Structures are given as C-alpha cells and as structure tokens.
Image 1 (cartoon, rainbow, N blue to C red):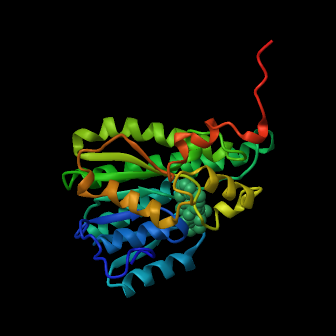
Image 2 (image 1 turned 180 degrees about the vertical axis):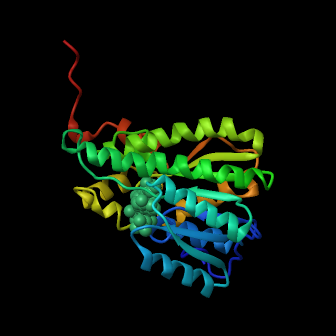
Length: 279
Ligand SMILES: NC(=O)c1ccc[n+]([C@@H]2O[C@H](COP(=O)([O-])OP(=O)(O)OC[C@H]3O[C@@H](n4cnc5c(N)ncnc54)[C@H](OP(=O)(O)O)[C@@H]3O)[C@@H](O)[C@H]2O)c1
C-alpha cells in the first residue's frame, strides 16, 4: 500500500492483530504512516483535527487496499479531547499496541518573529499533546502486556535550521521525553523511541521561506543525493513499532540520507579560497 514499495513485493505482516493510533494520521507523513501500519496488518485509528476530509480519504484508501482503519477527530492540544480519543479506543478495541505521536504544528520564523501565543500553541501540540497521548495510551498498552510508542521528530531538533527554532525546540524536548518515558514505561513492557528525518519532499517542507534553495542545499549536502519521502519516514516508524525492534527503547533514529555526518559542512569550498591565519 505504501506508495513506493517495489511492485510485487509483499508487505510485512508483523503488525497483524495490533491496534495503532496515529495522531495527525490523515494527511502528509501521518497518512503515509497510517497506510504503512495498515499494510503491515494493524488496525489503524486515524486521528485528525483540522483535516477531516483527508482523514476520511486515508481511511478509504486503507480499506480499498484490504486494511482496517477508522477516523477519530480530536485535538491533541486539548487534554480532554485526548482522553476522549483513548476512551473510544478502549471501548472499540479493548486496548492498544502502538501509538505514533506524529501531529505537529508551528510557524517557520526566526527567534524575534515568534509570539508567545505561537510558542504556547506549538508546545501544546508537539510536546504536551504527545505527553497526554502517552499518558492515556500507557494503561491500555500495559493491560496487554506492553506496546510501542514512536514519537516523530526532525533533524532540526539537533541542528539549527534557519526559521525552525519553534518546532526544533519542541522536537528537542520531545526527543528528551522519549528517553524519560522509555525509562518510566519500560517495566510495563512499553518501548518508546523517536523516528526522525531530514527534509522531506512534501508540501509542508515547501512552506519554508526559501524552500527551493533549502531543498537544493539539503540534496547537495546529502551523501545519498536526494530528499526523503513521506514513505521513508513511515517505514522507519513502522520498524520502531514492530517486533523487529523489540530490544530497542529510548533511542532516536534519524533517516536523513547521511546529511548529518556533516561532510558537506566540513569540506572546504574551492571558491572560498584560503582561510586567513588567526592574528
Ligand atoms: N515535512 C518534513 O520535511 C518533515 C521532516 C521530518 C519530520 N517531519 C515530521 O513529520 C510529522 C508530520 O509532518 P508533515 O510534513 O506531514 O506536516 P503536516 O502536513 O503539517 O502535518 C501535521 C499533522 O499534524 C496534525 N495536527 C496538527 N494539529 C493537530 C491537533 N491539534 N490535533 C491533532 N492533529 C493535529 C495535522 O492534522 P490535521 O490537519 O487533521 O489537524 C497533520 O496531520 C511532523 O511531526 C513533522 O515534524 C516532517
């Protein structure tokens, strides 16, 4: 079902019988994650808030491909709505195996161009939303003997991308929370990891100021010579959610085509000429 699986290649069925919640699972990366988990056999609860039509389309595409899914509207930025979402999961499915905290919001701007309201909204969605979802999901997973939480992050959590301060700080906090939750929830059999990625070739990345130049820069700096796709990140999420990752917890795996090894940054440009000696 995922867009770029080789024709004829069988989908792994390592999530058959599992129930998964994907926050913001109706569009963009979230939709790719929903499709990938469903293709591997999971029943996917496609959470959405602003994009109900896209979520219904994602559910329909999953069902057409023979998978199982339903859409549930709730804002992860509102604790009572998060609790209602997981109450519905408990009622309908009797438990939960996988939670993917994919939902995100933010503004692409520099440090002196961000308002307190924008900071609060971003933190409520990207950090507290993931925290509230984990809090509500943990008992449903523990009752089944364990589960997997995958938090979705980005390369800007660890590297200072231009105009990415707001989301980058939220994602850095999310990555730190991954490690603490892995320690706290491990004794209940719950693994917690971060799936992160460099710049993707998708509509949201096109919203960056200077998007075309940013894409060219990332492509040129990546040893693999291309941007990521939504499916690249979705497969990483599915791996971390799957039994293949059963001994992995508290980790952040970054899919970026090798960009973060830093070769481009550390290679002198011939055009720059010799570096002056310090005086
Ligand atoms: N694009 C990239 O280059 C890139 C790179 C690395 C990592 N990522 C990560 O991938 C994830 C998805 O990004 P994207 O590129 O697909 O961007 P996107 O299209 O803007 O996706 C944001 C998602 O969050 C959901 N969302 C926003 N506010 C919500 C709320 N209050 N409650 C529930 N859901 C909410 C949206 O759903 P609704 O519209 O239904 O609210 C949407 O599905 C993010 O965590 C992002 O950091 C993206």
